[in-house]
Image 1 (tube, rainbow, N blue to C red):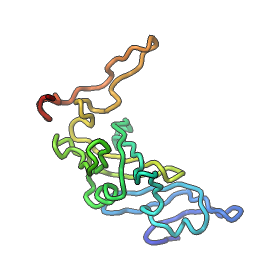
Image 2 (cartoon, rainbow, N blue to C red; image 1 turned 90 degrees about the horizontal axis):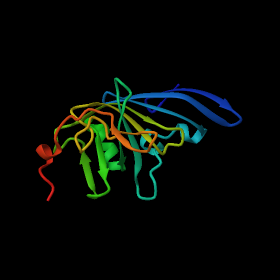
Image 3 (spheres, rainbow, N blue to C red; image 1 turned 60 degrees about the horizontal axis):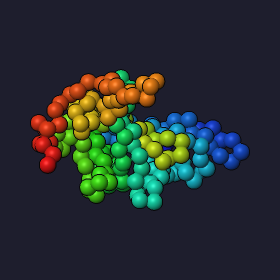
Length: 172
């Protein structure tokens, strides 16, 4: 069955539909949604399925599309999500700067978006990307570059990709 360009495989059980998979290619980005819903939810589009919080934000986990390595977590609002879908480049909402943040805009470390997945509750996104350079603003490939040891000390467990002072300048 297709609804608004979505190919839907579903199983109806006690008045609810368990959507096994929805695939839609939007400007070369595959969007996958898996959730249990009522019949009305099937008619919704992707953007209407996303459950933004009271501040209009949704968390986005970012993962390397080839290796599965988690690179970072950031926040998206509707505008940044629409921009991501349009440009196929990751765009987030900066809570500290209160503005849109096109990843890599100042560093050159862009993220090309291959897939967007949404969780069962519609309140968390997973972006699968190709990362150019480091994802972390302190220079590492991943923002999750520190491992907790048994003695609760931290050790670096990732590759330093760039010197942040060379990219962003010295902090004053």
